[in-house]
Image (tube, rainbow, N blue to C red; front, side, top):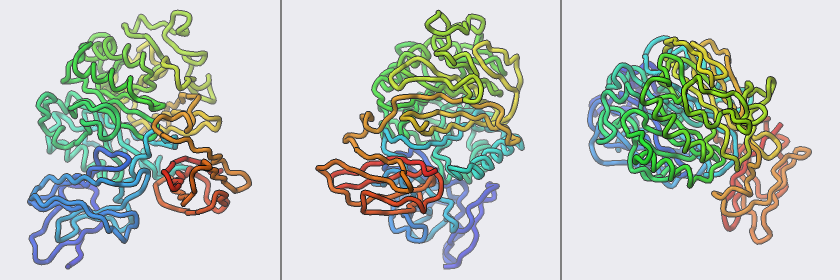
Length: 534
């Protein structure tokens, strides 16, 4: 075997090294690898080659010992391999190739997947949110680089991106395969190979795709869970679907092709799904915003009106916390709302109990801990949600930007970061930051939700009586008297195993500051818990 560097001439960022056989024609990885449909125990790896080959993924928890394999002997140029039987909340390194050679790998360990935590786990989560990014221009790359710098320099959770959430219009102008190569894969290749990408359909994606037949480049490129394999209720379609990550439930809707009527298949599925989730947080994504006065106007355009008047009453009644939209090429962020389903000029800033559309004492404020106060919500309370139109990851297009339900409206480039973390008192904060292409954070806010505890989580069948709070550098793991402790494992914020113990009293004074996931293995089951070392 001759070790060479293999580059796709259509890629601007490439994998460091690959192995190529001297005897075979050059096989070039033209696209990917990229990760799809992640769950606690599985993930899909996809890539494209210039000639048909078999498909092999080698993977393992140690970079230089990829001893597990998943493969397909069918000859394809578009490859899709599912890894199953994985351990939750665990980092797996991988490479891709054929049954005779490795085509793409990272010697530094930058090709990996960290499986999702068990549904219901309360731990730090970070999502990168990109609306209407697909311009393939310098603006798009500046927004990308600003986020890369943000996550690389974060002091507590350096390098951790649990998922990418695309809000549609991922490739202009019509979502063709070639446009996706230029505006999606060539731009985000470094993140796509280590963070699962999720998306909803935008109108520009929809010009070359059809939701009814599940055809076109958008549906060829993405593989989304339609049978509930990543959590939530099976939808039977990739046009709209759900997934769980930690204690968050995500609902992704198609506001472009699918019927938006009350009683339509998408409406009925959404209602069934949201009413059956037991997750602490509910986040919804769809392309056309319920509220906007940017390059599109939610008072006049039918898809925007339909989503606001038909879907939002049902979603709000069932406890949605955050609604993410694109379409308008600007950043608009609402107050903490409930019940505003009319035109902009019908917005009433008074508190809900006084006949208005804002929730709680801080609902008409800025949502900032160092300002008017964060937005407040109990785990069992439905009312209260923030709407964000963030469609400026690739361009800005102006507009009046004066919707009365919005706290802030900016004609600026940027993307959003969602971070969920413990508040130290048994609850969690959902934090959103709007990161400009300059690296500045031009808006931020928090929703604080009380009453979030591991013992209450229906997804965790057994109660773990553990007081995982460091005291004088020690953590005590006190399991039920009917169980026997076998092993405790500590994973850092990017899933690397950093400590093991078989004791109930564990010295953690040698661990660096940060958030850790603890896997507690007994003779009967396995528990997961997060802890912050200060």
